[in-house]
Length: 595
Image (cartoon, rainbow, N blue to C red; front, side, top):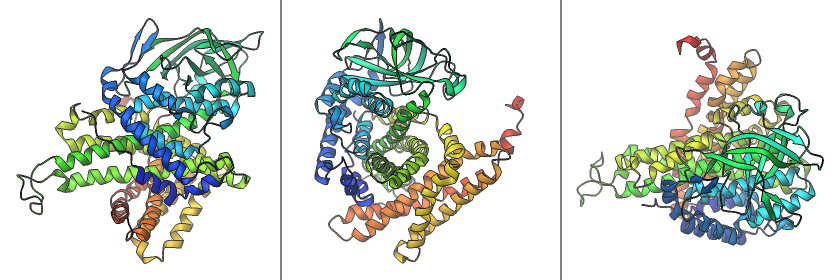
């Protein structure tokens, strides 16, 4: 049974245009074609495609999975045909530069489309999603020749890209990478080594796969400062840019996984494979971070996408499932029992899923639009502001979206009860699929360390001020608005607690770095809660002004969801502050032998 899904187009348009004034994006140089009617039409077509092409293959793809035989990976039935429809529809070039054949639409539009595709089929959507990240890295760091060779093929969808970082002995600590790159007289390099956990590393969807590989030159300094980045194609590229003979980069095995079974995860062996350096010598991490940051935002999108899919399925089931009577008396006396949606605990779960998903959507699209400002705004000061906000909130989006997305899928199973635990309704697949999002592209613990250890201190705290100053200004501005009091007061309290936690870390981490490490996950959770709270306050303000119009139900639902968030979810910041200020002693004073 395929779980129900309808793309939340009305909410997407609300966030993009009413909350974030997306019409301003179309005023940026290069985005003139992204007019309101164009964007809405694109989103509507994407919704139809996701619902009609990707969704029917989600459960069957999970059940069938991928197989490897004689070095050839076979994907689930229908994946190749669906991918071909995806490329024929021009979706692969949606946000790529027109000079390479792309449509040049804003990145923020692609985020909404990515959500729809991931909600309907997380596994299948990954093949194209990684390619977008590879294109960004090449566009940012590649030579003109490299751009002209690879980017048009990515836009066409005839080539896909991967990211090859992890090795058996190193995951997060990329300074331990041992893959070697030997320079050749003709300017190429021969790469030898083994990479693991490579998503979409081998398949027959496209005529070529371009691997972005981190490796070391013979004279490279040790650690992270000695890593370079290389383009390693599955098939060598002829002078006419067609795919030629096979490069010795092969799939040695595929992983048998908890979820995303339709997305092949490979062990990739390089045996004197020909590669071409991208970016500067020993500066591979700077180049790869372009792709990694794109992938981290994309992973955050996967989290909220799973939450949306689980929410829709849980709501439909809760309306239909008849069990017991309401605590306040029968609500459907003509039936033997009431639908479970009348019960407070079921409503708690449904509203939690809804509040997190819609709040995370607002936060994610906000930062996606900031990245559009970074890419196109002619004002250097505005670009710096956008860069600061995106840098600060990327780890928050990646971790908070995926943590709450996993929570939402888990609650979806709970709403279904025993029927959620079996595969028939598809709910348990959402739990298995989204669980990886808390792990790859840097575990959520690493995102928390990035926020506390790097982003807090960058440019003497300038990144934090980019967020703290406008939120403080908004709270002060609306504090005298009686209609907004029920939203502003909880936000103000939580914001003060976040500032207090920030000050505690700043004071106590220098003398004992373990204080920062022990506080980091709780601090990031606080940051996510407050950021989403800021989004919900602003959404409630818009809805209050429009609730008597033509879409009364939509706006009243916004107000009531905001009220639930402020009363039931945002107060978590109080307990999180207590755990932050508890310090690291109870963690680090526990003798290792006691474990």
